[in-house]
Length: 84
Image (cartoon, rainbow, N blue to C red):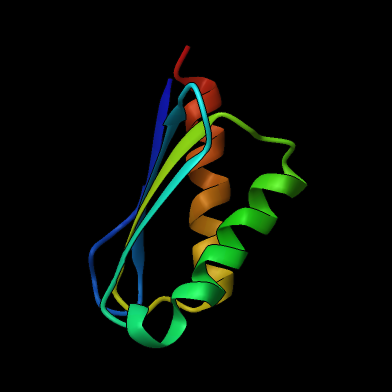
């Protein structure tokens, strides 16, 4: 099961999520030197809110704000659930 949402356009992010044997979060961000921890916290908090464990999340960030990252992740999660 896999879900993808977003784009690689400026001020957006492309997020993919799929089931995995443990939780892995990979972040590739053009602003990672400054905001890596904040991006990671947004991803972790959203996964916790959704009750998700054992997933692999890959984020390609082009300067997206927190609410954009969260909304892209929520959409990817819904698409993953539909991919049955």
